[in-house]
Length: 208
Image (tube, rainbow, N blue to C red; front, side, top):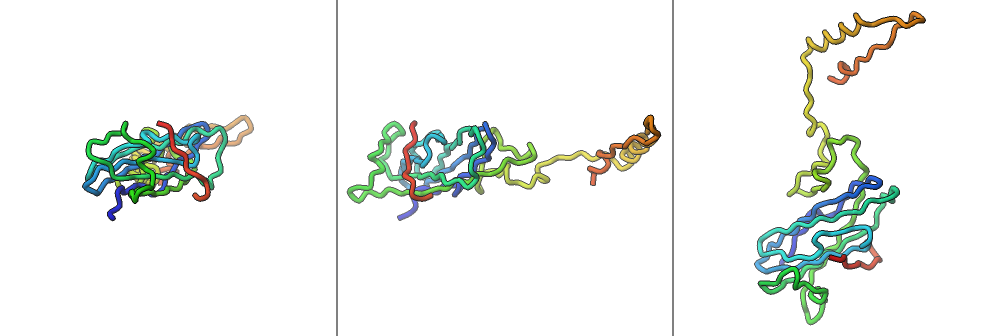
């Protein structure tokens, strides 16, 4: 049977900063000709929120939801063992989000329920503000702009002064150099010039 939902990214990645929330966007793609209902569960329901955590993905369409890791009071263990489970099943045409119940995802009477487990990866915060997620959401995967993972050089726009201007600036600084009371020249700042060059833990349903 064709996979009901394609899920991207394959792993949830969160940038960890003490006392700050971190989010990532998940995209579900329904490549079938059926309406597919989904539900999200996690091993740590108090640590994460998912909006929305249930939904209907129309045939040949996509659906996005955001997973948010709550702000941590202290730096967590970067070897995170948290996991998520995304369940999906075919539902009749006309089914809405309000019609979704836990029984829809019960594997009984030969009903097909697809389950995909996702790991959580914690990432240290970037040093440069240029690498911060857009609007606080870390977009990942080939369908998204991986703003956090890009080479910072590609994202930085730097305006360089012409060589003549740089030389003139250095000359002016040299001319203005003065000696201290002890007769030792004060240091010259040439910064402008120099810078040119899972398992075993039960999954818990998230509250809506």
